[in-house]
Length: 111
Image 1 (cartoon, rainbow, N blue to C red):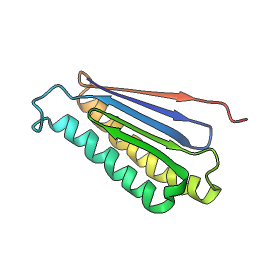
Image 2: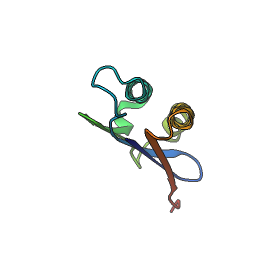
Image 3: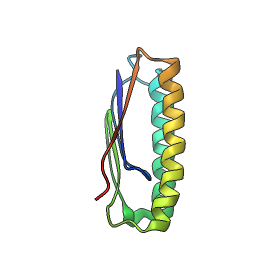
């Protein structure tokens, strides 16, 4: 199962964690491929617009994207568009494959 956790404030998504696999054969799993393609494309966009304001880690079956607390407001606005679009795509995959994708969103208070 692929587990996706998004963390957000009232204004924007601040972190995305993805782990696991879609359950199909390696290299042939369309669910895993779709999630990976969306997440990696979002990460490339984030890094293109504000590399210095993003923390990211990728390894086999795991991905982390985190917006740094020190990110400029301009970058936060761009990042939120990219990450909100990522969320919409991941939610669509989850709706179509609920037995293979779990998606959770948690809110954190803004200090």
